[in-house]
Length: 139
Image (cartoon, rainbow, N blue to C red; front, side, top):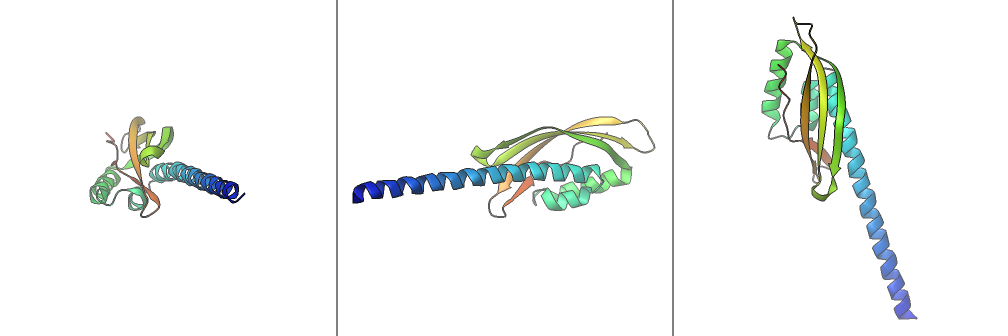
């Protein structure tokens, strides 16, 4: 009887751990989707510096902010964006996204489109997603 009870307790414990792990992975995946949407929305609304301070890898942040300042001086305006693909890769706590931006640079009124591949990594230490790629080339 005790042996049977011990097996049942062990089984329930394993099932609970598995359920918690699956719930945590789902939470990380949902946070990835929110981070991708939030970052790209910030770019759309000309909040490039805020997006950089919030999501860019600290090692890349200085270069990113220089790029952002240059784009602002050139008169970049993002008219619209689309997230084409977004994929969370739980096996290595990373994610990939591709976004397209419709933009123009004054004085031109010609709208151009650029594709922007984003590589994301989940940092367990800060419980947050960071972007490992800089801004695309807006010509």
